[in-house]
Image (tube, rainbow over all chains, first blue to last red; front, top):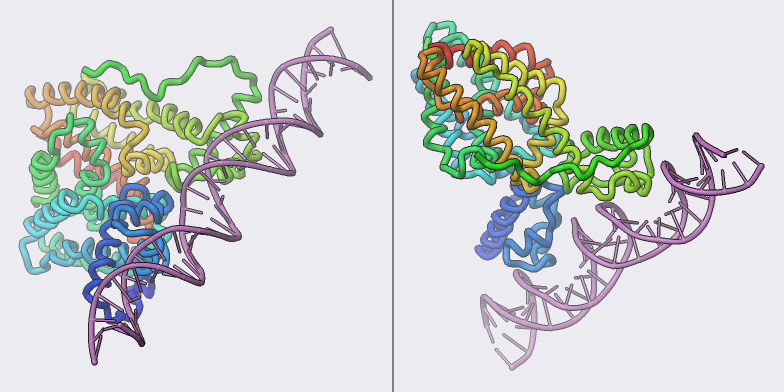
Length: 211
Length: 211
DNA sequence: TTCCGATTTGACCAATCGGTCAAAAGAACG
DNA sequence: CGTTCTTTTGACCGATTGGTCAAATCGGAA
């Protein structure tokens, strides 16, 4: 087990007024849009400020730097992103638990594509800022779940599958519909891919996992 | 069918000396490295020039702009990227044909991760420069293959699966090991993921496709 | 050697970048 | 009203960006 990563931690939670909280939220919203479209380097403070309806110095009054906005976003998102994983119940029915996880992840791709693309941008470019979280919290969580899955397999309650690669499969298959959205829609003539995706992934994992 | 896209076409093939061909190749090599690490906006001409062992004006002597290098790369890569798809033989054994395709794609993730990440960067950020190719050549190729697969299914030679989503699955599962390499390795303690991936994907698609 | 086109480079430029600062404008409260 | 604290802004700065250009250098043919 790795000890909890010291990176991406929030500083002291300063007492914020209602206005400050609201403006910071506006900025994070705008930052999410811009960073997810352009990546860290591609995003500009001017664009984020415009998107948030603020002047650039005003934006910098609430967050001290571009880095600060980006890291605040990553920090907030990490929890959201790991939630569906933690919701898997070791005492549940294995195949159904994993299928439900796939469903949750697919729904996140549909409902929060910007968040997915923000992570995708970060990781494709080498994860320079969330690597510690990947090697810390994420790895721990994955290893814990891998143990659970191995138990399920040993008990004959699901087909024998490498737990780590199973998780990679869930991530890649579901996030693909958010991250590669434009490609998917280009191929499908702009039809909504999600109904078909849900059915397909249900079939795929059911076939893979049913003992 | 969409007519062949007019974008990303090479200009008249000017007669090149041996030196010109070599230097241009150097530049594309360096460009591939830098663009795949940083995306279009994140890449700088200075970095590409340094990587190629040239001065910036010298680099611009061979390619007129940053855009020109990037588009030359995308153009060259598109063919390479579509090759494994075209190698699928409609007269072959369905399950084995698709499994072989998966194998080729996975090998490309292992051997050409920069190329994979270049595309990933481009598409995650909205595919502003290869959208025409996606809606043209790619869509045509995919639709052609989808017809073949539907034929295979109708003949009972493979399990009934949505052909488009099947292809998305192949792409996402295989490219994940290149595009999200740092995440995969972070979770796996830096072990080589490819042997396990090969076995896992073979199992996954065999289960999915065997009638 | 001379010559000529191909190649290379240092110096430079305008635009954009992230970020600063002092001063102005609001808001809250007496 | 005046005072005090918070919020907002225009003007500005140094660094970096993509790209230009004239001059220097190179390399091969005669």
